[in-house]
Image: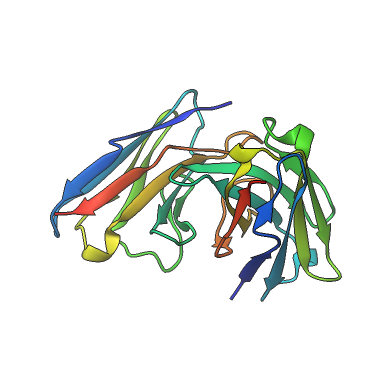
Length: 120
Length: 107
């Protein structure tokens, strides 16, 4: 069974950088698949942030692209999200998930999610 | 960006009812559509991909149909455990977008 677990600070100050890591177990990232980040603002819908392949190839949501970096560490079986210059509107539950194997598509395994609050 | 519009935003139905949720895309997405179920405090769960393919382990009372710009998720006989919010998501382009969600309540 594929398990994903997000980790990182739950509180980030405005203008600083949000950093999260997703640890994967039950599947080797280096074996394939895209791996993605999705967020959900309190009481709101879902927003795709971006996805990365084991090779490091990335696709980003254009609305966030200027502030986002997604990276992968196959030796640790982890992938990470960095979102810089955060504002209050970036407050959300952040999910990591396994994307499709051939391209960015849909997500079949999800982490439990982690709430990140942007506040001074 | 491709906009995804779901209707209704909320529906209330009785156990055993047939329930249909609609998702419309702002442009054709062929059959590149997924459906998810999300319960409060939990991550979304994949139900359907490629518009009508049932994900493994998902009860057969869930089904999806449609192509182009109009899609439906049907629950053939609503069960108490189906109380949740349902989201559609398109993957026709490299910019993935979700619908706004439909909350299903049990009467």
